[in-house]
Amino acid sequence: MEKKEQLCINQLQAYLMDLADCEDDSAILELLRDLLQTQLKFEECIALHQYIDRYFEVIATTDRQFNDESWPQCQLFNTAFEKGYVLSNNPKQELDFAFLNCIEKVSIKNALIISINANVNNSLFIFTNVDIDKCDDIASTTTFNILLQQAFYAIISKVKLSKQTHKSLSLINKFTALSSLFKDLGKEWFWRLDSSMLFKSISNIDRVGDVYTKMFLGHRIENIITESEQKNVDKWQQFNQLIKNRE
Image (cartoon, rainbow, N blue to C red; front, side):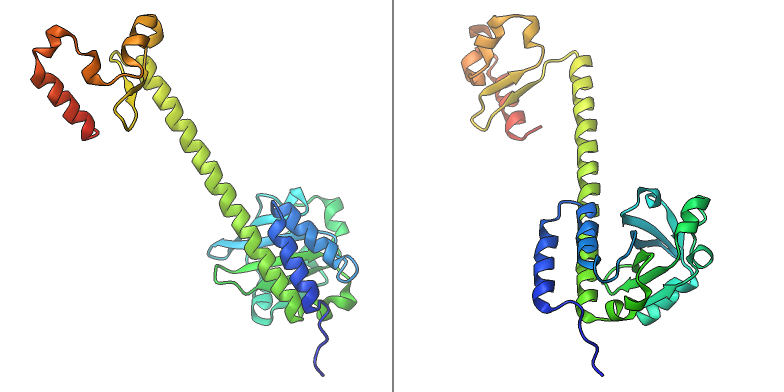
């Protein structure tokens, strides 16, 4: 008998559109919770992604206590990769929940592990305290697996963007600090010209007053050469060439 889809195509399309509007991984997991509230009825959700051989990192979770944890690969994971999903009725021994305190261990009665078919390293979703009677009907349906796959892609995308943004901001802060230090410690003057070769800014200009502001800013080099310097044409030609070559 053909298995009945628990999520129709129209519902799937609607949730995929909602996924695109999620701003972060927390919003993505809350969307899954809303969808499965009347079906799977899970308590917590953990998204795992393999980062090195036989070890997985938490990339998203509804429980902060799982953040930054590393999960070793176990037999349940292998079964999930082989069959698509597996239900553990004794996750406190079968899964590595050793980092949880005793109260939280007691509260975890079962765990549904679902593998994600993605063109990346092995990935899993773990749902705790699910409705056992509905696990097979939910986890084995095509539309549900498509939704989880797209949710995983959305999470990965948010994680990569967050890391890239953090890296970019770190580089900007680093170069800003180095630039400020170089400017403050440098004994020479530094200036900035626009594409028309007009002076736009000059370092240390505040130390000498408005005279240099009037002399440099908004002017080209040839406009500020004095009569005595005009005699030394070669020097200014060389200087102009250095600027044109951006040296």
